[in-house]
Image 1 (tube, rainbow, N blue to C red):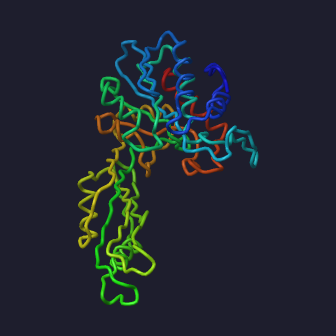
Image 2 (cartoon, helix red, strand yellow):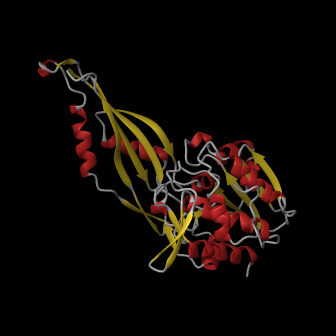
Image 3 (tube, rainbow, N blue to C red):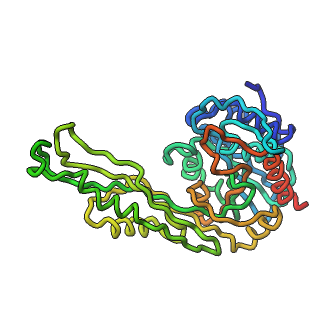
Length: 359
């Protein structure tokens, strides 16, 4: 394990070094310490640390300020660290946990934070912990509550993998439990009871027949989704169950509020007791902002919708337009064959450097 990270190394080598430092959620301290040490060597940055979240800021009196953020943690490792290089069809990839989600973006941010001492905008760099676990542990959430001033900005970029394109905003996510009740009886005399599991059949049929809507928001088409993600019930192998619970996940367009999403679920499943277990609002893309349009033009990226929920929603909730922009294919995130194109890391660095320096 390295004693230091070298931001002067090329961004691919830096990505590999960061990926080879295990930082599964709740175990980010070693990596956070090394990131903090690398940033502390840059005299143009002011540092603030909260747990394993490190914030570094320029204060150059620029007219505009941007936030560039990336999370340090990964999902659990499964034999895919240390990283390795492989070539497929003439394309070189870096394989391993975190290469796509999202240490390639973190490496680019760390390198530029240290090297770009005179950006044309003031920049707040955020390297945060606990993104891959329960939202209450998220480093951005924690810092937003204790130091909301650090989130004051005209625009925010999250380095989540986006295939090098700009993904505006994100869908919201809602999880609800549908509870059916019945009456217990012996399975030899099921007519004397009411089977709660059977009572969930109409909900399952509705879910199977559901056609997801595509909603246009500020010129981007957000495809929604509705899925059963869990079911539980049963007392014993010879007892008709008196309770069963179906968990449903609704991914809703950012034009809808959480209240809108809950109301839609109550309308779709009126006969069930419905309990909301998790809800996060989406984020409108904010791509109509001229400042954001300038970013798109500078990095030469195509604007696309983000179907999954990301922390851009935290910035959107504070009135800060936010996008996802980072190397890697998001469909490979969390998979055992997670990998990132080497040229994608370099291209992301070039795009961000160009925009930050006005080159």
